[in-house]
Image (tube, rainbow, N blue to C red; front, side, top):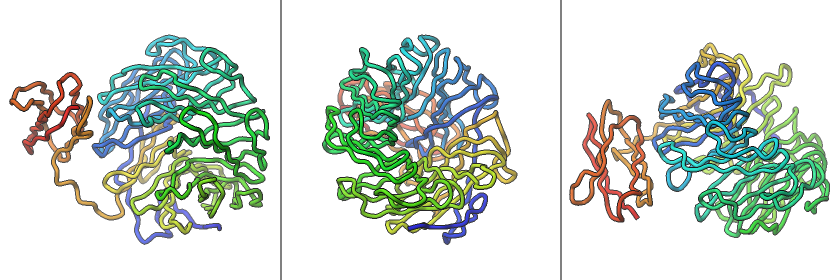
Amino acid sequence: MKKHLLFLLFGVSAFSGYSQKVVWEKTIGGAHADYLFDMVPTLDYGFLLAGSSLSDKSGVKSQKGQGNLDYFLWKMDKSGDEEWQLSFGGEGQDILKSIYPTADMGYILGGYSNSGKSETKTSENKGKNDLWIIKINARGDQEWQQSYGGDGDDRLVQIKQVKGGGYVIAGTTNSGKNDQKAEDKFGGLDYWIIKTDKQGKVEWERSFGGIYNDEPRTIVETENGFVIGGVSNSPASGNKLKEGYGGYDLWILELDNKGNKLNEYVLGSENDDQLNEILINEDKSGYTLTGNTYSENGTGNLTVKAEKGSDFFVINTDNNFSPTSQYGFDLEGSEFLTSTDVTANKNLLLSGYKADEKTGKKSYVAIEVNNDGEITWEKELSTSGDDLLRKTVITRDGGLVFAGNSTGKSAQYKTSVQGRDDYWVVKLGPKEEIKQPEIKIEAFPNPTDGFTQIVINHEYKEGVVNVYDLNGRLLHTEQLKYDMVAVDLSRYAMGTYVINIKTDVVNTSVKVIKN
């Protein structure tokens, strides 16, 4: 089933009955190249951008360069204005690929590095690239870091916190057997799946692959363990038991809680198929797979066909990953899906970038798709250069934020260029106005073991946060700077504490339980 639609620059929608307006856009970076790879929303309606920067202090970047490419974090508020920025790195190249919010209100950063022990990197390099993860707390302070690797090239793709507070890492490896890796390599690139405890100590690790290239794309935690989805062009070989259909196929593994393979599935066609995300259906009846395909004939068990180059797809399956329905979407170019989300009305939001079939110029694109495979909304954002969308987030106020990389300008919106490649972030307003919260402040989580984030849901010029015990003793005070403040209760005994926010607008408090 093929859906066709015409896109216009900056999204004058030809399909939907409304047009979401651009509220603001931000160009972020220094004098050289800055590459965004991931983004997460924050409780204060803001966003945390994650990527890597080649720039030293220049443009809007105030962080010193520490080597070649460094991990680069940028925290923005709900209006897109900067709150803070952080940089981590050694003397070499450090690529931040994945960020995930942790239960203690901090973040886990995952990427790969060829830096040795230098600058802010505390471990020596073992091979070409090693996996490198950093844990920061709610205030952005580093708590610990760990690296994993062998004599070859090891690259992290995604990291997630899982039940129990540990982490699961999915990456690629072509390293041989060593003190951190129990199995020798099978071929070109293998899946490398690592489970760690809360401090990043390895609990188990597994390698999966055939004689060619096998690359994971996404991690899904299930009731019984994990589903690891990725792509493979290997035939049955190594510890891959299933034959492929042609080119790159989707290769999906079911693992138990110890990393042992329970099942594997291959979905593909005669040409390359790329996986973006695997979603568990709300009723646990199966899965939804998203990605893009180059298939022209729809052979194999993926029957969607690409009209021009590569097209988006949505595949619904049962619990054994057998397809039950399949939909393809041609956006009048060659499309690459990089972000999948679920809207409030349970539709899919598919976004990525499109290459024009004549010029090759790239632009941000997004569509909303209902359960019948029908497009209910679409948008394109473009500058004079190339625009590669990496992540789309549905915000708490019902709007959308698109984040990626851009090399150009726009007469209408994007008027600045900081360097060769910049982070480019665009906020669209909601389809319909959503009433702002009546509650002036909120606390997340509550109860807490350590940090709680106090979200200030009103505009103010100046303010202060005070922490009291139930006897009225003042335990801590500090000036407010942003719409969210991290309060650390870990140093205090179990009990209830009163966190008071006093601004030029309100004087109000919230009770927080310390476990």
